[in-house]
Length: 466
Image (cartoon, rainbow, N blue to C red):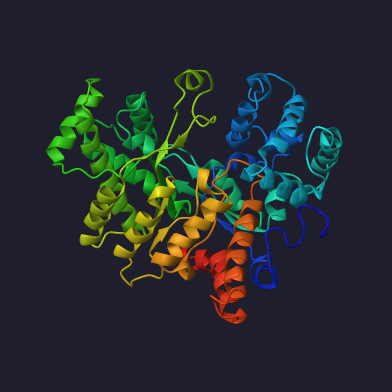
């Protein structure tokens, strides 16, 4: 296999890296504690009739690459046939060299389809047929793909208005992979968003609360947290540009909310006060229920207004933002901690310039009550590539304890994205193996191997009380 591009020692540059990966990391199950997989597809154990449906549709990483190459939108999100979309992706792949897409593409073809040929225009037709044959065979349904990935837990992301019917169905099924959910209430926080009042009406309907005041909103959100908790949810997630923390009074916040409910304009300052109040309420409630809270910070979303109008959000028009993060994040965590209401917290940042900010911020609130209570989350979105992950690992190592890190997640909408865990594990093992080779770390395989096993699997298992 060593003559193949994807071989046993892909990304492993010496014998120490190889030993760490193969003996301590490779066989560990996957705990994917944050992704955007549709639970309905898992509950119904859907099969995919071709590779485009499972691999290209919905993948805005691939879409951005194809657009950059000058491929018409017809062959990306348009009405072209699935096969033509795949052929255009195949044509794009050789041009993605040095983008993580090149590595992921070939890892995914190898791990799910046992295909080790490079994908390009010449091989496309053959690979289309090979994947077609596999997808039509046993073991390639949604549940089959999760089993192939050696997944133990996958945690999808749902809005407070979700019925969780698919999770309930899965809970009663004999599926051996645990499928849980994360509570994502950002639509209730972001008061300036279009359609906010319509959303609050739907939240009220689901919660059985007539939402006319800030107290009503909190009551409705609490009822949904109780419902999610009763259905096994132990994690929440927020995707915000930055943490909000402005001083406010309950009276102010109530006035702002009522103005919004009457469709009156609210100022940016009023929005920030309101968002701060909702976030503090939610996070104090998460603490009460013993949940883990996650904050994905720093994305600048929907930059292309024309394409957002045509295709909607999450279609590949987002980038890294350069928001100030440190002061508000510190004040927010401090406000929760000062009341002893800071639950386990994972903070992900999208701007690599903030790596050291985040790596040092978490140390301010690790109070000895829980191992790794406040975590600097793995390289996310634009940073879940070799350089981004290495920089995150280095910042965390230099300023915290890498040994307490809860490791990787896919944050993906694709059932074929789980080799990202393998990618991360190989990068981690190579980083440590290189330092053993250079004499910067001792050749203590037992201890460093344990550290690798912990970061790959054990720390997450302990952190999420699995």
